[in-house]
Image (cartoon, rainbow, N blue to C red; front, side, top):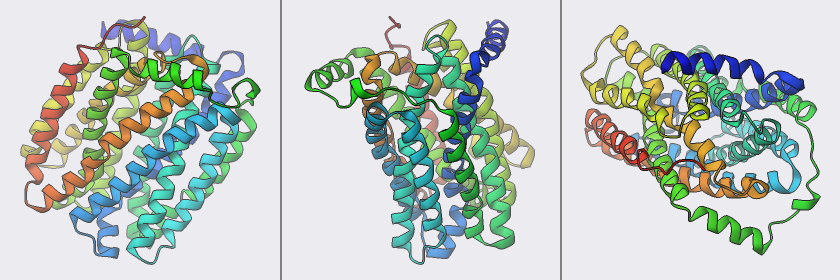
Length: 400
């Protein structure tokens, strides 16, 4: 089954380039990769931020929670804007505001300013998350899952590249440069999005009517949507806590240097980059449930992580943990397909707001518990929650 799915994925990937669509997909993927990659700099440089602003693990967790709550709150307005003004304006604006927010992080002179700039950054990249889905759905109506999988791989590559670069620059020249190096890239990507993403006639959808809202509400109450959303909340909660503190855990509990910890963090995301498109291809050819089988690898690895020692063992664990997000591409595609096409941006914006807001408390809880000496036990708890998520996914109704 795996070999057949992999071969089918390669055929589908080649088909994405036809009719000039490859350039559009590339620009969208670059923007998504950069915005999420820049977001991952926060956990990568969390030890430096803690030292610079005197944050304990609880306050460090609160900073990450602020980031993810703001990101969640940006989903809905991002979806509404995609429906009202089109994806080109929404995507370009998201990247431009993100660049300004990164500059604000770099020049922050107090913890309060750092938290405020972090919130603006999270809100801005939240706009991008929904508009990319509706843009891809318009360009790839038949290969939506595979195209989404490709763009979902882009942030993993961004997250594999950005943390090691940020960590190295922070050691050489200070944490400010570790954040600031992404600003020129934001400017270039904003230009690429403006030039490649097609504008569309939004006159027919210039507003969300009462009838639209009733249709969205009815769709959101469907059992497949409710269960899929719960699965996403649980999975994202584990992912946010894990990625938020994995570099800190490697430094404080495994004795690795910040540079090595950042490199292993990047290795984790590089592995995840391979998982996303494969998950999308499996979803396109089977059901939403099948990709969850690979998540079981992460369940076992999370449970074993406290006992793993040495750079080789931790590197292998980092690669295996790339399967953690095996649920995301298929479940997101499943949820988008459950919504009325002409208001999918608004509807999916509501869902992603619920997902990321629902999971955003996990870094704060993780930090507070870790401050009390239960760092290792938290990975066992995450393994248990992720295992329950896989079991719950078996109850998702079939597509159609």
